[in-house]
Length: 325
Image (cartoon, rainbow, N blue to C red; front, top):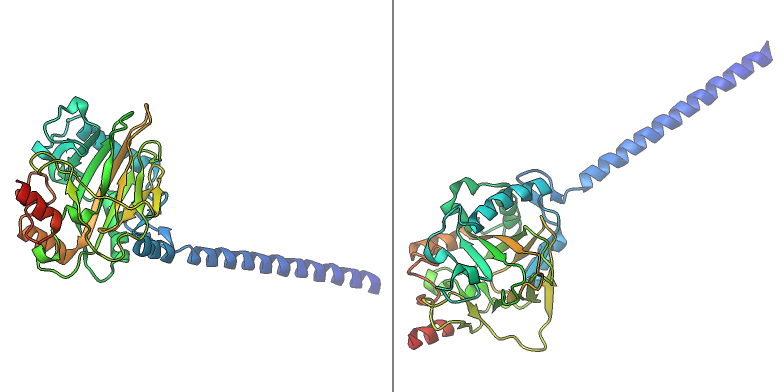
């Protein structure tokens, strides 16, 4: 009887130990899972918030450009793509110079366009306002410049048509197109411009390229117009030096690039015979800057009377263009 009792007790002890071990293991696994979920604080956490990593923020400020992969889902991109293509097909009309080729003079027949440009799509199609891309990028803009009340400044749709090797965005700084602090009466220029890849953006179809760190000094370099005046064409260009570090910024469909207002950037033509390069651009600037732009009549519309060749800010390329005209 004593032997049987000892065997029963031994079995009970083993069972209890096994249960405790299992419980402990389960508790440990839950704890690890919980800690992982706590640590997964970067990336997209809702339809309104995408948390950038410290490294992504640092890269943006040091290099002038950063790529953020996988921001939107395939279904979300497809919804925006549907509206995008309605602009490209003229189903949604865009007036005058706000619908143009960004690589050529105004007045070129649309059949010959290489970079189809639609400025301010949410102005001409208000139903696009407040879309998920706007909401997520607004949260990122606040993280990049937490003290600047970052505000949506403008939006833009761009399409490099297939096989258009002349669909080249000339090297430039965005500030070359925009009024400087002197013209606006402000001391800051804080800007982050987001480019959503509707198509895979690769070297072959003319992805963004930039001169690493070229905007750190916050200095506007001397540009020259590709045409003689803004009445003939909107594009500006700048010369870069052979020893400058040029980096490509490819982006998969649904990913974005973010660049600042002073980084020197551009892109090559589309060498792919069967691939477009469609890009949805959203720019955010400090709230004071946006308010000052609007006060002088600058809205980023190519139809504005106030534009890069009329700013009274003393920049060399504006003076040269004014003298030439």
